Image (cartoon, rainbow, N blue to C red; front, side, top):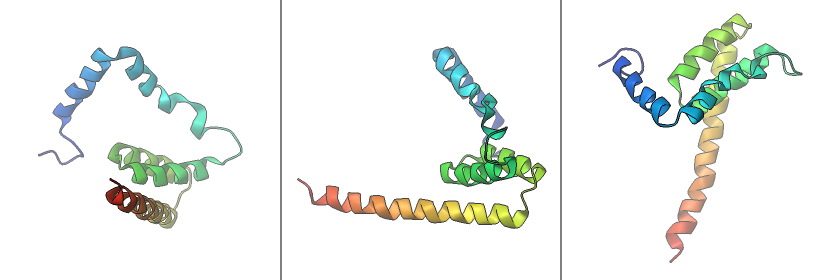
Length: 110
């Protein structure tokens, strides 16, 4: 088993997506080149804190690593990163509880 996220051999499966849906794959690959982390009214440090929280909400280990490193370079402290992660956890738990109500509703429907 790999010691870094997923097995390196898994990349071949991502490449299958590139072959099967080249235009969609190219669009996905360019998402990180949008200017979301540059300029604008939100400072880079805050943008990275948002990205850290979202990366934890979506559960992407590659995004977590990338944005922790970019955040650190932008001045994010370890404490701020921890708080962003826990804010994400709280919101995810809230969403699960809110959607749990839907589960109860659907269970009772015929």
